[in-house]
Structures are given as structure tokens and as C-alpha cells.
Image 1: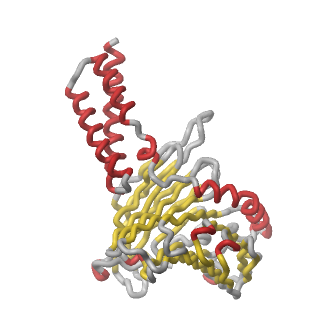
Image 2: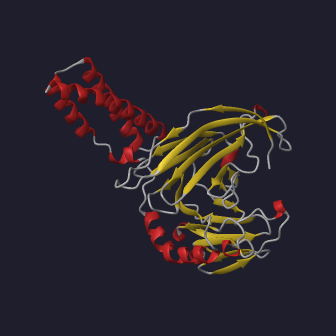
Image 3: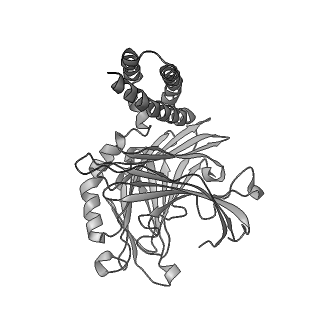
Length: 382
């Protein structure tokens, strides 16, 4: 575990309120901003370490997704993940590991060694969406997480935009099911359950993805039913996208290596943290819900809802109605200008430009804030 000496926090905490009673359920999103700390990890003594957490929370579960890496100039122009670079501190820090549960390797090269270009919250309310972006010499990788109201699973997309077709694409996963056994000098009994069988602690299984398209990671000692541990965790993949899954449950860390088909660029997974559930309850849940989660995952858009749903013609019609009520004004002309900029950003966003997605969100926020003032003015003009 890391020991931190000084703390400098950069950024804002953004809170998106949940729905009032009787309203449709919503997803709350919180962005804690970027935190820069001095660390004392071996090989990184005194180095600057960056981390950022974004929380996606509905009425059933809250997932905190983390980016973290040593960003000290000693590693420039690269960065150096200490334990990993994509973490999940909540619901339980031990399940999908808080400081590194997911790695993306393209032709054997770990994307995480390159600086992160962006990590942003993009949707809240109707659903929660956050996204990490890496731009590196070989192309671009976007890692997106979606949480829907009333859903326990965190849907995930790894969107690859390589400059050259890759020869291999591998995703490596790391969890500590239910409890940090060795850290607390305890002995557990790790086990992975899939549709194709079971893998016990100390064994290893590499099999076709079609037989192991979901997996429950549990510990038979640290089971909530026994009054021990946090509860198990699980993952799901789209079997047609992957070749093999390699499971390696150790006595402490439990590793999973997914080898995807090299021609796949829109990789989709789902993750669960069943904190508070017994092993039996979680297994029943996976057997009952894995199929419908797979169908939902196939049909999920990972683009921001604003990009999918924004109707600029309707917005312009609204401005025309306001102009008829209060007459043309500098404020109305400014709103038309903002909408024109938003249209350009929307076109670029629909072509996959992630920077334009962020620009569009800011333009629409500014437009709608000013629109309220115009609506109030039109109300008093009646």
C-alpha cells in the first residue's frame, strides 16, 4: 500500500442530484477532480502521483472509477503506473482492485504507459457515463463506463482506433475477491465459477471465451454467509469478440487474461461488485441476469446522450418563439451564435471527436443557462 506525504488537489467536485420521489430514477455522478501527491513507493520515492475518481451511483449501487499513475517528470514523456492505472475503489476496494484492475495491451504494449489525454463525466441523470481517453503513437483508446438506473452492472466499452491493424489485443484483469487475504495474514479459498466450470485457488484454466463468457470471483472462506468478507465480484464479455480467457486464481490476487480477436475494435464487458451479497446470492444473480446483460451490452450506445439526442431544429424553433414574444435582442443573437457553434461541435462529435463532445456539452450548458433568462423575460412580456 502507498504512503502519501503531501497533497495538492486540483479540480472541482461536481454533484448531479438524484430524482425526487415519484420521478424517474436517475444516476448521480460525482467527479472529484485530479489529485497530485508525493509518493514513497519503491522506485518512485518523492515522485508526483496523479489520481482522479469519478463516482457513478444509482439506487442499488455506487461504482467509483479511478485513474492513477506516477506522472513525475522522471518518466517523461511517458507515465509509470505503480500498481495499475484503472482502479475501482468502490463498492469494495478489494474486489476489482482500487489501484489497478484493468490493463489494455495492444501488440504487447500497455496503453497505460502513455499519459492520459482525458477523464471526464459525460452523462448524468438518465444514466451515468464517464470516459478515459489515451492518444498514443499507435492510435487512440477510449475506455467508457455506463451505469443505468436500477442496474447492478457497470457496462464497459474499450474502443480502439489504431493507425495500423493490431496483431493482438489483450485485456488483463485483477481482483482480490471479497478480502485482502495475505495483507491481513489470513488464508482464503479463492474460486472462479463460469458457465463452463470452476477454477480453484492455485489452479489455472485457459479456455475458449464462448465457454467462459462470464465469471464469478468468490472466496469460500470470506463469504458474507459466514460473516466474513465483503462479497464476490463478477465480469462478463461478449463471447463472439474474444478467443480465449485465461483464469489464474492465486491465494491473494486473482488474474484473468482475455485475448480478443485482433479484428475487434469495439470491445464490450460488464463488471459487478456484489458487496454485501453471499456467494450463493451472487451466483444466482449471474445465472439469472447474465443473458439479459449481454443483450443490453450489445445494444448500448457509449456516446453521450447529448450527442445522440440533441435536436438543434427544436432549439432554434424555441428561440424563434421567444423572439416573437420579446423581439430580437443581443441576448437572442448570442444564443443563436452559441447554437451555431454547437452545431459544428455536434457534427464533429458524431464523427467520433471526443474533444468536440466536451465542447458540445459546455456550449449546451451555456445556451440553456441563458435560455432561462430569456424565458423569464418572455413571461413578463405577456
